[in-house]
Length: 307
Image 1 (cartoon, one colour):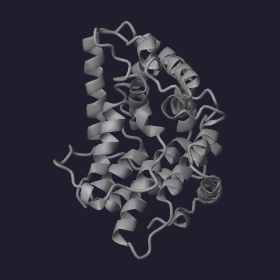
Image 2 (cartoon, one colour; image 1 turned 120 degrees about the vertical axis):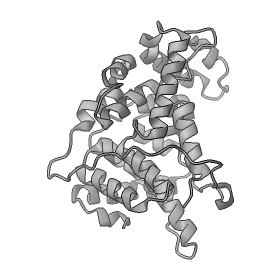
Image 3 (spheres, rainbow, N blue to C red; image 1 turned 90 degrees about the vertical axis):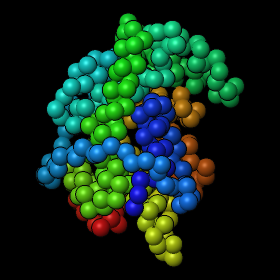
Image 4 (spheres, one colour; image 1 turned 30 degrees about the vertical axis):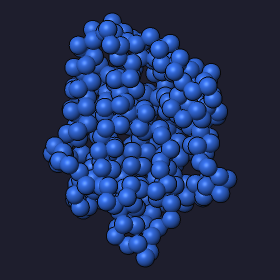
């Protein structure tokens, strides 16, 4: 399978427009039309994510990295700590810390854009709570404010390149990228390794791979499609929250969801639910998440339907 506009959507939104605008959007219920999924040009080579051996004890990346990112009020500290790390999990943290702030908050004249210039143009519906969420994110980015404009642009390009090359990928991101470039065997191997760690950080990262896998499955098997790839994928983020990823109301992801979608009440999972169009969808997501949690805890990768 060739690279498609699906991957261009992923890379453009996650790398160029700020990962928080991408990662916390509601997943679409339907994929782009097949005719629209042909890339104009190939992307750069993929940096392989290291294989992770399955162990009986959950990995602790969620504690040392994932939850630190969710809780911090100084994203620059995390960025500078992990920017040049040799550990791909840590490089992903640096990417996420930077992309929570930039390029969205880069001012044309240099430095960080005044928050009022963003909140003033929000739609009137939910403007108050969304403006408060933007201010909260801006506050977590504020320690970057002494950097000159050229430095902000240079670092933004550095992180965009890190994403495009795969250097800034979490394991699920790499699995999605391998899948979309046609290497399904490597994609499944990476997804299985991440799944078997039982690490909520790695589990959450599988969301993008899962939705692309099932979209393409349905393209290839139109007579026997699986239902709701979007809910199957979102269940991985819900499961990660249940397993220990910080998904509280003040977590970075929850605040980003509020700013981006207007879902501003409760935990991250509550906000996922609010973004679904019907109670039937919410019930289906709850069921899918419970099934997935059981499979993760029993380390039964085959139970989720992947080869």
